[in-house]
Length: 333
Image (cartoon, rainbow, N blue to C red; front, side, top):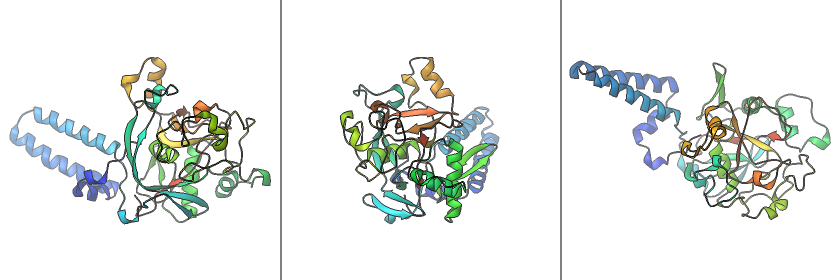
C-alpha cells in the first residue's frame, strides 16, 4: 500500500468526497469530467483539449489507485500504543505517525528491494500482538480443533487468499463489516470497513520497528536475536508457541522470526532506478506475488530484519508461513 497522506495536506473537499460510497464517487468524477471536458472541447474547438482531458483522467486514476484510507474522529487516536481486547484477540492500538521504511545504503545487509529508504506516513490502527494461532484459525474456519499441544502454535500452510477468507469470517462472526470482496476473481479491499484484514507492508514495518531505525526492533546486533526471536539458531527448525520470546518496544511478539507473515501488498520494487539485472526486473513485473515479512524459524538472522521483504506466490502453502490481523475501528485513524 502506498504511503498515507497526512491529513493536514488533504483539502476539506477531498475529505468529504473520500467518505462517499465508491459508486457515488465514480459518478461524481464522470459528471465533473464531462461537465468540464465537453464544454471546453466545444468552445475551444481544438483537438489538444482532448489530449489534456485524457491526461487529467489518467492523473485522477493514478490518484485513486494510490489513495490511502481516511478515517474520522481524530480525538480517538491514542497518544501511545495501548493494549486492548478486540474480539478473540489481544491487539495493540497504535497511533499513526511517520517512520523510515526500508534500509539505508550504509547497511551492508540491505537488499535492492529494500531501497531507497524513505519517509512513510501511516494512520492509526490495531494489530494483533501475536500471529493467528492454530486454535483460533480452526475455530473460526470451523475445522477440527488442533491437539492441545498445538493450540498456541502459529497457523502455517495458509495461502494468501485463505488468510483473506479468515479475516472476513472473523469479521462477520464479531459483527464487523468485512474488508474484502472478490471482483472478477480478484480480491479488493474496502479501506472504510471496520473488519479484520491483513496489514499493509507499511503498517507491518511500522509496527515491527516500533519507533526504531535499527536493523531489528532491539538494535543492530544479530547476536541478541535469541532473546526476541525463533530462527534457525534456536528453533530446531520447528515453529514455536507464540509469545515465548520478548516483545518489541510496542508489546508485539514474534515480529522477528517464528513464521513469515502475509501482507496485503503485491510485491513491487520501491524504485526501478535500482534495477540491476533481469531478476530484479522480474520482481517488479509479476504482481501476482504477495509480500511476506518477518522471516521464520527456518531462516538466518539476515532474513529477520525489520526491513527485509520477500515475495511468495499467493497459492503456495509452505510450512513456515502464517499471518496476523489488523483492524481499524470506526473513528480510529
